[in-house]
Image 1 (tube, rainbow, N blue to C red):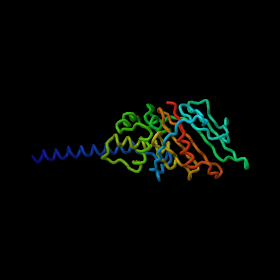
Image 2: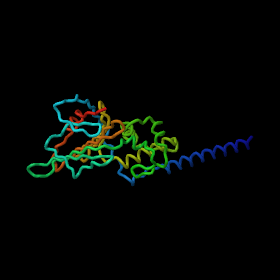
Image 3: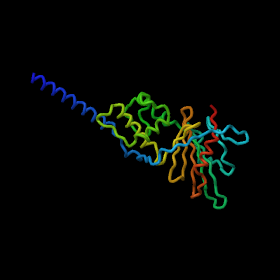
Image 4: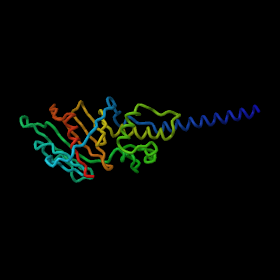
Length: 253
């Protein structure tokens, strides 16, 4: 009887050691490398803007860009052919506002189109943003944790970035931590994040004390980016301006 107890204890010990070694290997293999990108700063990153879209106004002049139309910023903004990128899968249009007295830029507006964060994370390719995701079945993993769009991705980052998995975490939890944090450290700028809800879905980065506002809106798996740059301490763009801009956005379908 005593011999059976000893054998049982040894078997249990072997199982425990095997479990610890396996989880230790997973934690080591899926550790997050902070040297490849900036550590995300998530201060004041719980703000939310609720957008209610205005009805189409035929008296306004709209500019079309892909599936989106936005209100013209005004005749003082001049399209820059030199800075724009047109013949690309991801076009970029740049408009500049020059101060008539100083002949220097007061503001720059950019509009571009990219893949959404969710689409990039769930893509079949192994490598994204220059980081190897170690052949994780990303689609299955995101589906298991009920990720459906960019809002889910960024909300998870905000709520879980400072949390770390342990040896008691599941393999899926360890892989998700690695996947999401690698994305955050590689693809996200150092900025405050504001969530956009209501009639629009997305996020807004605010960079360098309101010098730059970068709005990301998801529509039909595409990510439309509207960037507002204040130049030479002009303070031309502010939060109310950006909100009013979003209020007048129109999507074709």
